[in-house]
Length: 116
Image (cartoon, rainbow, N blue to C red; front, side, top):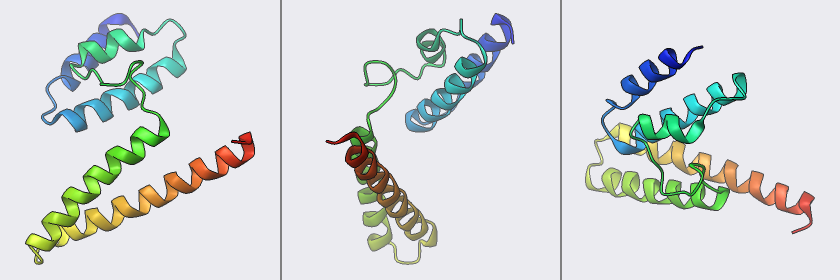
């Protein structure tokens, strides 16, 4: 891909409503582009996508990801309790809880292997 392609993708991603969605998609795209092009500038691309992260290098640590997911889970759970008929909120809460469990297990296994 050329610089023009990266710029086009960044301009499209910068128009995604919702900071979390935009940051997530921009980060996934940046990971993919960086894997295929050693000269790809991840920080510049993220900035062009209007998706700067509060994390120093644009990547969250596993603990930060779990904290973010826990906040999201709380939001979904509150919504599901307030609106029991909202099947989507219940499904999102269940799915988010499952993801947190998987990430936590992965972190625990990794720390055990690393001797932490």
